[in-house]
Image (cartoon, rainbow, N blue to C red; front, side):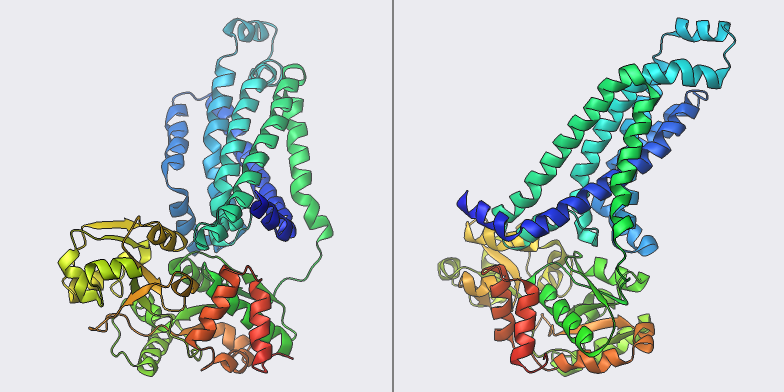
Length: 507
């Protein structure tokens, strides 16, 4: 409990900002869902033949995994709030649509007949009789939708939409740091409870005020959503720099920002924690971000769907640079010195028990060992697929998991081997044994800024500014910086700033 309170005190400002973002995204998604679902449901009550197919379609939308929906939307809408709101709105439609349709249909038929007998047309009957009587049921659907949206909003942090999911993802990335996870999860749950209680109040009032309660609720929600825009008159960023999940990309993008803003008048916005390679590259192609740090080996294998022609770092960089320019019209600037290559690692105890020194040694125990691999590693040729091919390896027990969880699983003896990165801080913290790669499966992975050519044409000074990092940052320096962020809880910006000052790159 003391640790949690300490984390809470350190991150109060971040928590409040994330909570406000979470509330805004949730409310805006709910407002749009209400504006779509209520009128649509009212129309369907008059055209009942098409009602069930349309309601069924909204039910199907809820069965699609939220992560898949977000990934699908990135090429069309980029990253950030817009695709998150579209996805959340889609998830929130069903309860409102079904409850509104059911509420209107369940109004006593004799009351409808009496209204018709009094000369009311369909519209007047709807507004004077059906809607007021159905409002408690409609409000109950809105309550259900609100809780669903608030819970799902946490995943939106993966595409830079912000919210409490950022704290949860940060906790997962840091080896399932329970305090950070709770710091994001508890406020999300409390927010859902508070909003549910507020909407329950509107549901109770609706029994007397009818449709007015829904209008009042919508006006308050719109006010909360639009309030920041009335006071936020900050300039829009000239450049948006994105980064994958983890301490390392976050440190690097802070370096980029500090260098660019020191030497130009450009305003830079950072979008850290944008998930894996595919999310970042899609966002770069679409134009939602302008720069992100990518690795030479990853560029060839994942982005160009090719194999490295050499294991020489310089040759790999040239191959990646040429391929990206030819296929995507993108510029790969000079790489840094450190090589964050893939590794296969285990504990000293497991290595001693099975006499493991290199990847070849895994073959004898492929039926006994349990591997903890990330989804990305399992699906890449410069990962497990390559291990199957080059090392004739067929591990029978593979558990796929997020990067931040695998080292904890290894530490708890839930898995025997994991994939890892050479510069990850937990390699040193846990004193892991890295199995050598005698067949050179894993190519060099040097980090370098990747950007669209049009961005460099617009801001040619970026090449000279960012190339100052070319050939700098050793493996050891990167590991130590990652350690400071992951285990000493230092802010990535401070760590980046300190390195740049120590190397006379920042005044």
